[in-house]
Length: 321
Ligand code: SF4
Image 1 (cartoon, protein in one colour):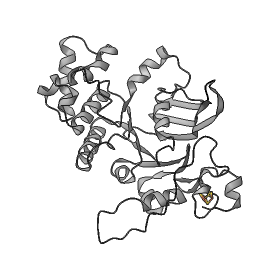
Image 2 (image 1 turned 45 degrees about the horizontal axis):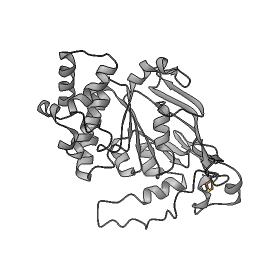
Image 3 (image 1 turned 45 degrees about the vertical axis):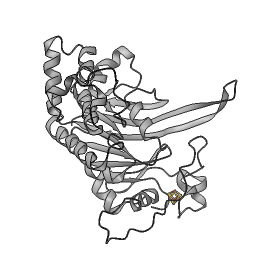
């Protein structure tokens, strides 16, 4: 059996909170609190949830841009959790990231061609004229013109800048790309173009994506499986079709009710998700969602529900489902 491109087991990332002039320990942010999932070749797993649920921290931790507090990260079957910087280097090539904001993630002083060439030079993949040739091919692959290689980021539109970010991520021929809200900063019409480009590249290169988004409408377009996160934990984990037709977790149900329906004749139930996500510093006891859940009972406040298989292929963390 082929190993998953990425496998994460019981991943935790806790940040100490320091307060006051003397920076005394003032609690812990439980940003990621025991998350497990896997992604196969050519597969997209979407991590969804409201802002502050820990999904971006998961993305950065699996790439070891942030060090995990506990758990295991396996890439192609190899445990990379505790590797040194030098040992991590070959794995870094296999995993790249596309950031949300194409305006701030590109160095404004570098030409677009140099931005895409940088990883090739840093990893010693190509030298001299070969670099330019490879960059030109990458520009072509993401739908940019070779003539644009000498232009600077401010000379591109938002969608084009995200294409530069994708070309840079592709330069090392990775197996996995973490997309951290990669289309959220773009106009809706441009979002579809960038998502279609990502789908084409996936088909062509067998790429795996960890696609992080707060937007279920976007996720529906691109994912195969979906993990819904709430306050550092996965509360529902299943394939796309099941999630959109038979979601079981009360939080997922409410997220789905908030997805806009394009047909004006269809009246969606009024948004029911009340209040904001509670602070991840000292989160609510038991089920973290009990403060906003319309079905909460006493047990929910006392006992944390385990993520368990409720139907074949559908994992849910809820006492009542
Ligand atoms: Fe709601 Fe209780 Fe289920 Fe949590 S465990 S989602 S509070 S019903």
